[in-house]
Structure formats: structure tokens, C-alpha cells
Image (cartoon, rainbow, N blue to C red; front, side):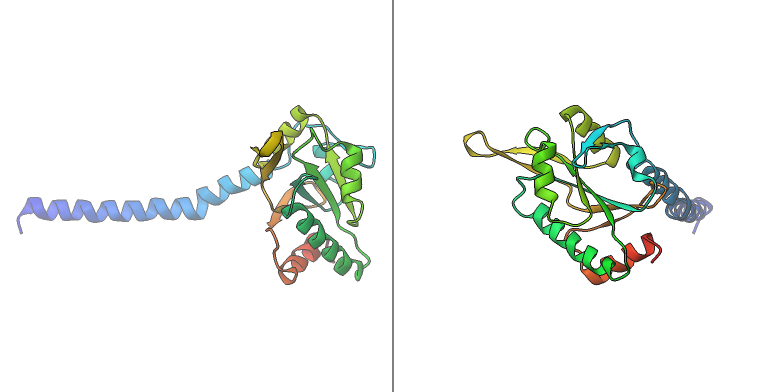
Length: 199
């Protein structure tokens, strides 16, 4: 092997070592830090919405006690009623510890979901407060919570809404904690809630 070939091999090995070090730096230092910065911003914004109990819902509303936030709409055929049913089951289990989780159901369809309509829709689910507002304010909230929502045209001028289907948990300081995925098993959900609520 001549000297040039040996130098090329040595350079290639050092390049591999450098790439490995950069990958380690990314996965162990930079990526977690970026994720923390992104999640720290969730829920922060200048939106001002209306709740079904007559109060305003802003970023400050997330502070004071642990809470869950779920985006949906009253014409939702399956995901939203299923999630409200799951929330009711969680509340029954938490009631055994004399606790109730505060839940905000934010409409992605404010054109149809007035406060009264939304109030009727969530009234059967314990601890759930409906949240709606103008299209502009809802759009601000969607951006603040990093939620996907899109109108899907139907027949005869009707429409549905595609939207993010998980429940977001926030601690008593209003900081994002984690998500509960759609139809996540209760045996996985309840430990998350008990830890969040210090039960």
C-alpha cells in the first residue's frame, strides 16, 4: 500500500470518527435541548377565547392547577365523542382519589360551535369546559398549541374537520408535560395523570 492510499484511509477513518461524534452531540445534547425549547412554547400565545362557563381562556388559564387540553368539534363523528368518553373514564378513576382533572375542549370549528352548542356537547363529561371564539382567535390558539386542523369539504356544502387527536397535559405552572394518544389504554393513562396531579 503506497503512502497516498494510507493517507486516504486514515482521512476516511477520521471522517467516520468525526461523523460519529457529531451524531452523538446531536442526539445527546442538541436535539433534547431543541425539543425542550419547542415544548416549552406549547400553549404560549396571545389568543383570547371564550369558555362555556362564561370566563375567558388565555395562556394564563393553564396555570394554577394541572389540566388537559383537547382540540375537536361538535360535529365530529367518532374521535371527539370517543375521547370525551375516555376522559369520563379517567375522571371516574381519579374520583377514587377525590380528584378531578380540569379539561379544556377547544373547538377547531368556531363557525358552528357557539359557546352554547359547545356547552351542551361537553355537559355530560365531568370536568370538561368547552372553549370557542372567533376564527382569528382559534387560529392563534391552534398555532400556540401546535395543532393541525383543516376543513374537509363534504356533500351539499357540508364539511368535516381533520384535526390532531391527542390530549395534551399541562402541569400546574402551565407548562406542557406530555400527550395522551387517541384511545391510549387506561392502564397507561392513569399513571401519567396521577404523576401530573401528585396523587
